[in-house]
Image 1 (spheres, rainbow, N blue to C red):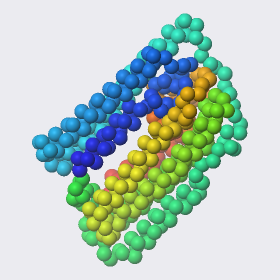
Image 2: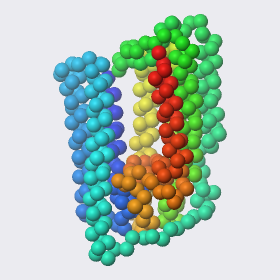
Image 3: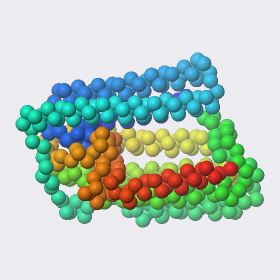
Image 4: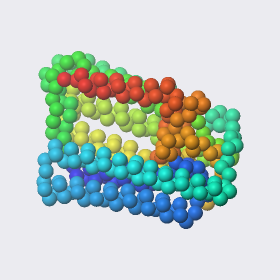
Length: 358
């Protein structure tokens, strides 16, 4: 479906293009800055236009291949993967370029007398006064969905076909079929249980993650942002589990048709994208877009720990989670081995299950 590809490309392109406009206050392309000026505003605009231009080009190419050249859905799927990969790579590389430009600009400011803020401000009541969606409720909802899915699968063992569909094209036509085995039947619930761990632990990150405190006003912004992010994340977590449930009810227990499955998946994906865009546009990272006219004091300068303005690596910091400088949400401290294991282990499990299917 060309419209789905176009919407996905547009979402990714817009998300990348908006990066400098949703960043934490006092952060420009991953670099701590005391204030913004016309030169910085021009660089932001240039970055936005570059990424949106690339996005429009890829959308036009997708339409040309689909309507003009009339390639098969399989080829269109490959092209979509290539376009999205190129789009992401271009956005990241252009971000790195802007990050280098900001670092050089900051070095020039320091040479002219600017003194970065090295004073750390602690707010010991930050977590106590902040609320998020209860993690235990989130876990319970996901487990109930998975349990219901497993019960239905067990009760309908006899009607499960000997060949199970594991992949479809954009029209809902099967593209990968595997034999009926225990692993193939229950691969979806197993992956869902791994997702319960990931999504629930991520919800906790909004309360436990490290926060850059500037003043009482910034604390209020961040608490509001994290609360809304947690509730949005909870909705997305439930939608993801529903998507997996729908796939199981189509491929393993044939209760739904492929077309019905496709429609449900498109609706749930659309809802997730709308939720993310809404949070990004209304709040921004750490509430950066709330009351943008208000003054923001210079924040603690820890640029040396941010590689490329994107990856946080600080051996002296025991923090597991920190707020992103590129994009929206939380990221991990790559110098914390527990954080690295948390990211790598679930990926290895999911990839391992996928590899052994069939």
